[in-house]
Length: 366
Image 1 (cartoon, one colour):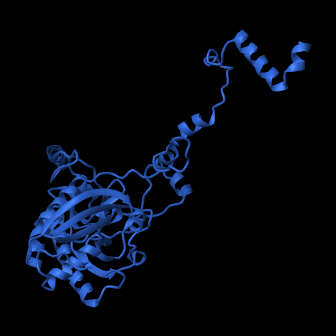
Image 2: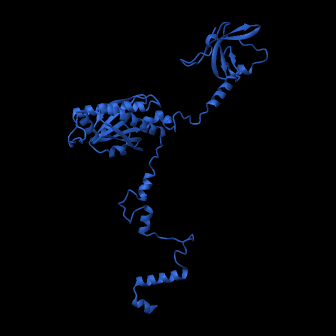
Image 3: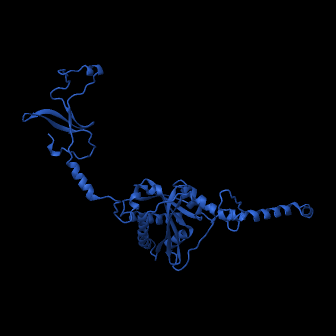
């Protein structure tokens, strides 16, 4: 040992010692199944677990860390009937825009996706026009975004541009009043078609509010809220562009149950036969009615002192109205009388009936 130590360094001695121990006790792979075995991961294995490709942390789009962060995002529900509404919108818009432009117009829908409202605003290429509209019956707002190509195309068509030539685009300048007015006319046509698309589900009116060119002024919802994006493409021979329709989930909340239907008129488990049977049985149910002649407070000592033969003095007169109760609920008011040697109560009015509700007494009153 002394001779070996004279010609070898400390590192060589440590590695030789480790090899001798491994040969006597076995390799670390053999002990991987034992509970006391420990293993240190190298950098390549750590990068592989985190999803870094070739150890490069710059690739954040497909790595595992990005998946961990994205797993905290909200998973938005799918609305089958809303997709049918958008398909109906495409068909109606194709006819309306042909009449509006006197040109051959083809409208197609690229996709319908759910995303956060702020993420969409950040992805809109500028310049563009943001049309804010209000759903009157739902008391909330929606957003329509028209890109620059569509704006110049519709202006060129409405001002008599020749067919077969692409619209001239002049970037780097604000939109003129004429361009904004023509685009506003287009938006009103599309909103009328959108209202018609919802008619089979519910009656809704979409009213144009304002036109913006800055996305910060077109924020109709919190940036973190969920929204539905329908991206449409309008083709007018060699001209055309894109139109995006954004509806926040908060706007669609009043008709959420209708949009969750797989087909028109779905009942979601509702059984009309059972409802009819239950209603018939309820009409035949017997209930006990108590006629309250009088109520008066008494001390506990007076109640304890009551004996057989004790008398109460009723403060109500002979013609005073009395209450008919079912449990603790007051149902009717009437008067006590006599009918064929029996004590009877004539009902005069219904207590607690909602305004506009049908009168259960009907023609039997009085």
